Length: 88
Image (cartoon, rainbow, N blue to C red; front, side):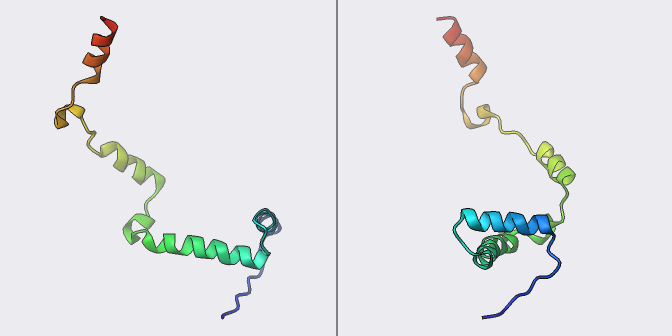
């Protein structure tokens, strides 16, 4: 197995790592390995084009998406259903 040395870790970050390791009943070393195992597969799943998107770009994209209308699928308008219930 390879050995990884990390230098100049900010004190507050290391304290958070220690706290997390303690809560998970792991050594700091085991916690770092667990974190790397959890995050690296997620990184490889992210498409390269999406990786560089800003929050602003994502918000614009979501606002521009076509909204689904229930009537497009043959479903009744919920407003009419509520009105019928209130009139009973």
